[in-house]
Length: 169
Image (cartoon, rainbow, N blue to C red):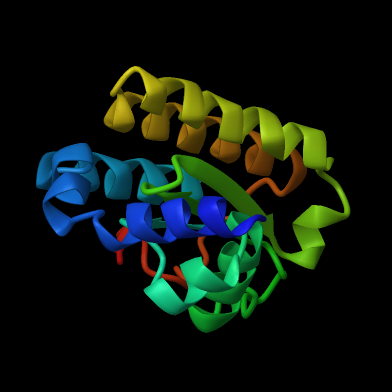
């Protein structure tokens, strides 16, 4: 990335605000998202997390950390890899860059192609472009739940290994 592009990106992240994030994902949307994750996890063995970040920390934005690199770091930081069946899924949203990435644990990654995950990300980014953050996110979670239901159906009651509430950074 050339210096002017890096500077523009860093400034975009610097000036992204908590208020913008809360307008995109107000409390009622976060509650609906939590409920969708909870309901979906009753039908499969996966563990789904949503992390929404208003913007990267400045040092990461300036260093050129990509959306995917940040998602991988958060996947590790939040222990999404640490599930019994290795079937954690992170949906990471970077509001400043308007980008979405999905990171799936190795148990899932072997069965679901990257192009399939990209289609789910595209669902979200298209909706975000129209300002439909809630609907696009709920649609993507429904897609993720369907994929997990197909590949990792529930074998009965099991403990919830990761919190279902979205993380707002």
